[in-house]
Length: 508
Length: 97
Image 1 (cartoon, rainbow over the protein chains, first blue to last red):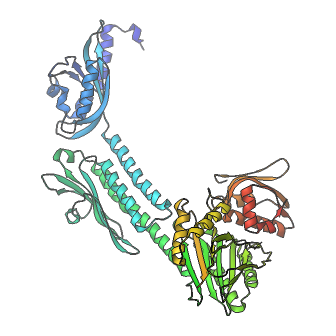
Image 2: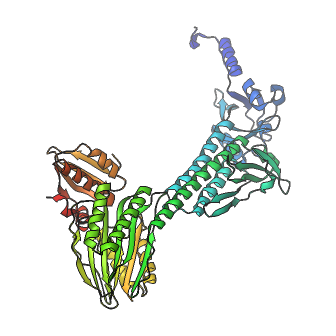
Image 3: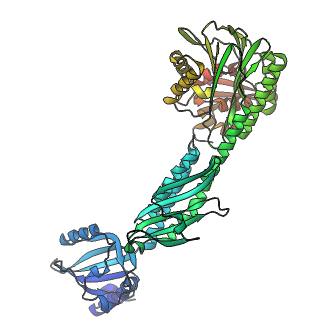
């Protein structure tokens, strides 16, 4: 091999020329005349001709502007002029057009060529067709938007069927990313547990005008065109379209049809996942509701209850309450099985049933807790529970607490946590639950609750109980109104992160 | 081990637990203590937050050790954990030094 330094001028020029002619990188050399009508093309290499679909004879002597068209970015061209006038190299991206009018996206650089005196004699422009790359990037970004919206829905502790609309918004935004022209839209009918809902966002085209399958052009108004893709899932649960409307002819040519088609396949999958989540959650909550008792009407005693689930998916909690009408007194039970999920909900149901059965049979809360403890030991459960026996006159109550936070007593002018003697939690297998007597007296109310109401990561149980006491102090008369007030007070500053139950009772 | 929960055994053989002992880390705690046996000393002084799921695995460990003739001794607990153990009556079940 002859080293470069030993090559003669002719040999060097031959090599450089051959390299420029044979490289697959597109190159174009112009003169340096920046005055109107601007630089003219002196030379293009075969790669340039392949990229633009133009022959060398067609372009030599003409302006590089023959590559431009309606979607070419005017701001990029202004920047180009400024850079070249200042003697700076330029790099940018825009839309160019092939000889047949097909738009494509290029990334291009222009570098000044200077002679020995430093004067700019020519410009060399090198271009790369980045259409495929940019389309892939936009599709990826669009899919990420939709996936993120789905993830947000699945993580939302209080998602309802309406929250599928969050995914719908993201889909419209995603269409706009894949096709940055015209107006994106979606129109879709989806079945939910509560019947069919219609999701309509953006400016969707009429469904009937979309092609039966795949992607197609649709006559739009005002001389514009729309592209619509029919959405259908295998079992045809969904019916609808995604579309881009109001496209002008030259925009239509630049639309990434494959990208839009890919998105059209993804949309039903994502919506199906979101709706499946809704269905699972609805089923789990229904099971949980079914396991909670119906409060009997009790002469002389008013009871109000609240159960606030914040479950993620089927992750329902194990909180429960019950009111049992004994012969000469009423038992109010509140408890919480640690953990979450359908299994825990079922365990909660069994535990509530054991307590109810025992209290019905012999009316002895201590024995009922022993039976409940046995169940928890046998099943490896950890639960806390409190049983409050209220005498028929409603004047006195006896609390037995298995590791459960203390009931709050509200008397006129005074709200305090009941001074209870707490015993071990259920599942410890140790037993020993003494009764703590509380005198209720006229106008008094008792609040039982689960730790989900008063405990947060940032809120210590003790502080939460304090917060509940203060809320009860200011709560309005009337048990239902008081329940609403307390729930609002405790969730306003500290949103629930766990299921929470509240039972208020008072002699009437 | 899950984020937020760290368990290490110090030179004196004490199981030192730090971080959060809750629903998210309960499984990790169970896995990390699965082979513990005999008289196990545990330092909960560095546990900033615990919930009922955390107490469940603590109680389960206590019961397993006791059935095998061993025991679980809590040699230290943060204020928050101490209050929780007191409120749930677990201080009557676990040996707390």
